[in-house]
Length: 421
Length: 166
Figure 1: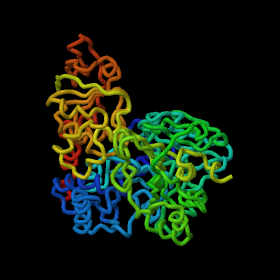
Figure 2 (figure 1 turned 45 degrees about the horizontal axis):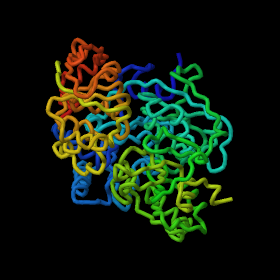
Figure 3 (figure 1 turned 30 degrees about the vertical axis):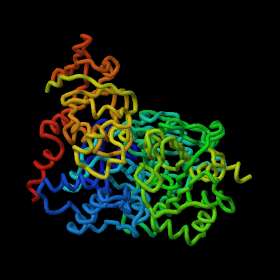
Figure 4 (figure 1 turned 45 degrees about the vertical axis):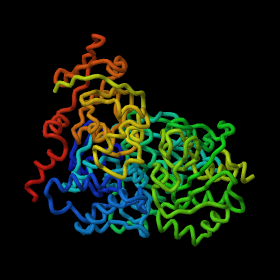
């Protein structure tokens, strides 16, 4: 019996020739990540063990990105726990404000993740790195503490769902639309405990930024990880970033899948997920008249260069609707600098948008754009749960950057074609 | 392990933002988190729940973020156990790791109503609804998980393994 990419990576890290779904294994971890919300708890648990050093100071990554630049005194104290621990442990991969990014935009860009790696992070969107052909999954703070101490963690080998995306994508359709459509098909627990393997000719055509977006939202279908086969685009992306050897795994032709799902990607229109679950995905054309108060373009889901380029393309020469606040958050300092050099930031500011330093901020209702009671936002983020972006009676509509930018101009949820003919 | 208490019921897909909204995550103090437990699902819950009571929910309980603050808030609010038709996987790991008893039982999740008194018998693998006189089966934990639970959570288990490296 053959194995999937996910099974092969897990087997290799557990020192086993083969593994099968359901098997519990102890596996070596290549990188362990924490942020300013999850790492303080992990550091507290780590210290209780009485250990002096983490298993490898180059393989523990700490990124203060959620409530930073610190939004209040308590947040500042939390971030300081990371900073102090990073200094005391001599961590080489601690990223300070001004030199950082949203963790899941930052780690691939900084060349910290490669194909075949096993990465755990105390953040549910750690699954983003599956775009590089790595096994990456979100865990809690105690799991992070255990991994920081031992360099190992237990895993249940997941079953895999194979997705094949056929056809050519329509204009304005990107990774966000594919993944929202997919979650709409299988539901928010449709891949619970499972690996989601994304393949097909539409995936081969998809950019790396689009793949990061898709892998990022595997968790919104309950997935343990999302994973893509490595191809020329992956290798191009890694060139100049990853400064070490890596191993490319491919699923065997006779690998076992729990389900195989074929999707005609050519028929997918730009998507919007209505409140309050990401599975409430519809074509933007079926939404009707929904007035909005705020638009957020950014996050670990859609804060990358391609996302900003799409938004700028639509906003060029346009004005943000008088009753809308548009907040744009580049995912990393490098993306910010590149967008500045390309003139995108000037386009945003000319259109009447606020541009922020990288932060998770509004996505989780932290800061930098909290919603008041009754307000509605279109966001390129990943969750539209009750109260996610602010008041429990506010609403979040999830979309890709094209729909988000068009909606900011129109003051209501709008298709890109309504702004650019 | 026998847990007996009155039940509070919730629906499907209760996410971690509903269990503990991110606006309270600028601290990891269990007592402070407990005061906002389940706030965006039921703002009256934290004020009503009594020590030893039980949360019962539908499918995919704890979906969303990896915040361990979610099971910490539930445990610190005095909740003795969570029964659900199914759990999201990170919440499941986190609950085991911090020692919050959780039980997966679609039958119990469907049968139990708010206010019912239930008795969970982990060894026997059953939940008895004392109010309605019904019994529901519970899936047992795999042996490795039982080992983790018996050790007192993940860190106690890890402590036993890392001593040699100190």
